[in-house]
Image 1: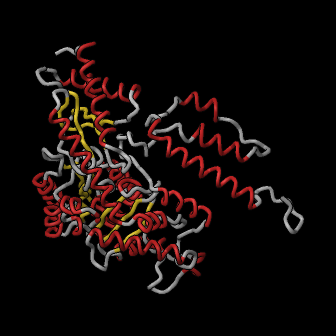
Image 2: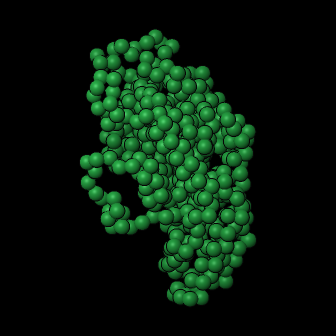
Image 3: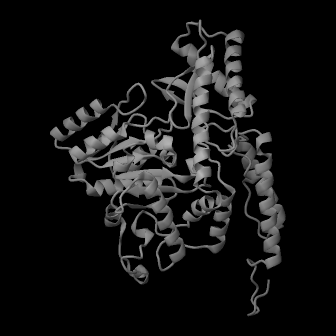
Length: 483
């Protein structure tokens, strides 16, 4: 295209072409969503196949935009785990709302850098609004605040940095977490310079919650040695089993000992919007910092996590900085810059998708969707307890159920059970439309189903459980493991 100054502008498109491509893209996305239930939950491919197709030098001259979009939609993006599939029960699925998807499209189009109030007043106020929603749901005081992040990993890092800076003796600091805690906490500690020998993995009880007696004893031993706790990390929905640590007891202890309480609620935190979730997470409002993930159980597209802190000043004392190049962005005290609350300077607008989704559907719809997921998890537990082929390996917590094939009237040793369940996992992977993942609980291989997708029905869950039972029974008949 030739501009008004007579200079060729190869990167510009005419409005008609832009609208046509946007319409094509939207139609492809809607078609994908409509067709998803009839497809497999997993459609990965081996690296060699993908390298042969994609590992090519960039073209010198452009191609048809319509053809490029078709290729991306039909040959690249579908080759993945479809986390929003109603039969995707592996890891922690993500089912975004359509308004959330549209919001990200709009954010990209408006191209806002939400680093400061001067640059992004409207989006900054919107993030303050969404953060205040979170504050109310948690039950935090007026002094609380937070920031939206790329996800739980970044939020955990920001929160633990704040905890370290608030510690009495950070140079000899120790970090405490349970043996069920997410690896993101360990990664955050390493980035912060906390060596592995200064990370304490506290054992858990029969429900996979932190053992308070072990925690108290470990902290006492460390303090006697002249070491100083940086933070105690609680879980509000572990990734393995959904277990929730004894938050009220931990809060009592941390307050008495003047230790920062950090809660990783990336999986379970948004269940606070339901009455059942509030009961399960009672005590979370007493934590110094809390991590939430909107792209998990608040039905948003990647990426949107959040860090909430009881006292906003604990973040700003750590992350606020003055730079000559940014001197024009400094406003009054009532006009916050989000770059003063976390690691990122340049950052996208993350609040819009949450705000649009809630405005369009209302909170009642979100509460029903979350309650639906918890109900499905408990129905899995009921199904397994009535089964002669399956057994539960942990109590259902929030939206996760962990079980294994272990038929009654058999005496299979640990290795035999491991073999059977690995066979079952592989057969579901290759032969069934569903996708489930696994974890380890007390050393045992557990088949794990996370059922938080608002489009998932009990029939889809039940059919997956029936397939697991069938594959388990067949593995005994065809090739019975040694006893």
